[in-house]
Length: 608
Figure 1 (cartoon, rainbow, N blue to C red):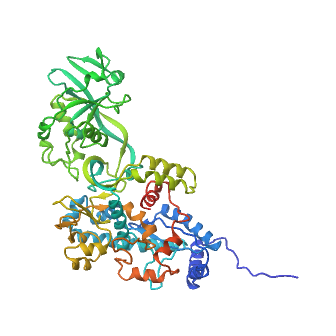
Figure 2 (figure 1 turned 90 degrees about the vertical axis):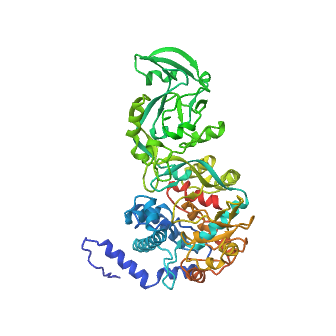
Figure 3 (figure 1 turned 180 degrees about the vertical axis):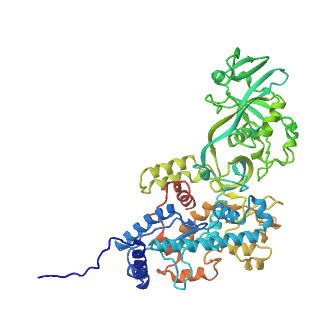
């Protein structure tokens, strides 16, 4: 028997884009994805939470790479007969979006935003998110990814972290943290981006270091009442000399008293050959503990703010024997370790720069100058006054802002934190139950959880989660709002809550509440939240799950108006919130790049 098969001639010029377009059109015309969901609607469930892509620009190759992994695995599970939610997600707030809007508007700093107007800026941020969310959806469809991109009425089916629903879930989380005593305002030295005008958290800093060449400064501080006798000190951040209040000595090390020309210097003996010229003469060896408690003249004591400082040498075990001089310049207002030392032994503290990196009014001839522009001015000042010993370039690893790539500074600030010690052990225990592929991902998480500090959640920015914190200045009581229901109940003017177009700045800033302790009106703190709060809550917010507390159950606001309710109506599985969470939580599988161990994976674990 002969079988004749008719094939179209192959011309050797396969046009892959055309072929892909025909397949996409066939899927669309025949409703293939909808048929798949209908076919699997009553099948066993398999849960996947999509790590939200940021809708600030079009999708990049690295995004397409990750989405390919997700699509392959979700399709595989569908082929194995599992029902899924198929929900895409978008990150919408924080510096990711703000910086791109600033670029588009030609802005260089927070001051430009304030002059432009916060309402216009927030609307511009929202518009950019909507624009690029749709762009990413179309790119994803073009690359063949299957997700529930649109509801039947044409509205987006993705979740958006800027929606009021997501914000309310985070409010609830923060109110629980407050009730447990974990939420507090801390006064500490923080990594600070002067361009963005805000602090950054520990987990944003980990991969932000890169090699950079900066001026390093060897300078000398005269010992009080001992002419021509100096401590020799080294720093890689000359601007912080403005905030010097102490010098640190390693008490268990030996120090050398040496003579060069007509002057005498103290430095660690192990570092003499590395630092000093060959003609230096060793006078004697001095135990470090004998140099503790001595007064000295500061490197920039000509500044008005320095007149109030009591300076002394102090003992510190963290003094290195590897580089520098073995005598460490201490500026508690500019360094995390320096600040902690100042708290332990009661040192004076000077904060020399403002939010935007400009020297403050108390900084004398440096007043109004920017920290990035003063290195040469400081060098000349030190040289003129006989304080400079040597100035040279130094290559080292230095942190940069993860979003705008500006070199960071460390600055003392009041920020909001969530204490982590109480939940450290439970988090490590739950993380150990996860199957990590590859296995070293689990080791990375355990290491991170072992060493994480308290979570710094506040950002001094504009387009982001409005922290629901109302600190009463009259009685010092901390009020934390857990829902819009509670906000309305406690608002001085409840009608203003009903009239809110959305829960963002500047609109939310207009709402005053009544302090639950003294009954005085209280304004919300101006800070917004860390963007990783936005993403960490999505397993709960996308399932509309809020436990009964403070009148929360049954409430759902959305900046997309009726679309939130429409979203619930369009869900393939009609379940209550509790059934939803039991069916789809926790996820069976998530997939992201390695850095998300300390970012999205961590924030989900923390907030759960």
